Image (cartoon, rainbow, N blue to C red; front, top):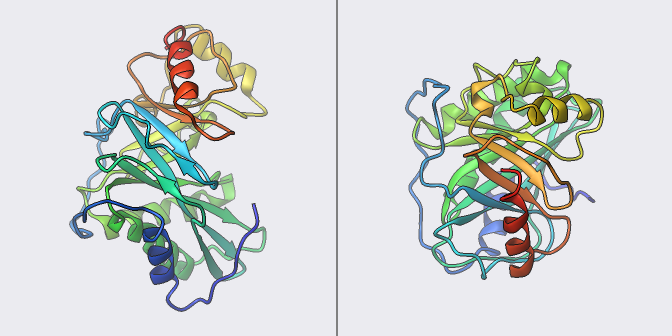
Length: 269
């Protein structure tokens, strides 16, 4: 999707103000905390329902959901790393949810090939992500970054800095390539509460992941054993049970779509 360049100054302020104008009818949330966090593999995001609908960059109307059993993870903004700069693009589309809905603010990170991935970018990016916890009804943040092997050091440092900003009480979730949760467990010591294995559009390695899970085996990484990321247009014969499901739909969500998916998921979850 197209990106909009913003001035480097007041980036965080612009980021928050633009998204706040989109979210309506909510109450305030607690301020950012700063105490230290000790990662625990048993961490879970308590209070978040077991069904989470992803709301990406399009006008979204989810006022039909039942907030008791369904929550929303919405794209709050995109951070693009170019050279030694940080460009923040806030959500530009409307989001309508029930007044008492529990929300997860998702920030997508995209790094150009020439991105410096330096300390300044770590600090600026962490600050922009941390600000989203101030949005009404947001109870957790989620980082979406398909970090390559050479970007893992940067990503680890970024998450450590983000944890420093948010403190121990605020849950941090990340999306994870399925390979990170199997033989390539580099995420085990990250200061996060959960890693969501992305089980759609997996590309290379799809057959291995499908075979592994279809045989009744679980992900090796403990951080990946509490949730799953699935899509409404990709079917599974079986998946690990008792997991929080984050669900992607490439078209506008409707009540009928949600109900149809729930009927389908009972067959393999």
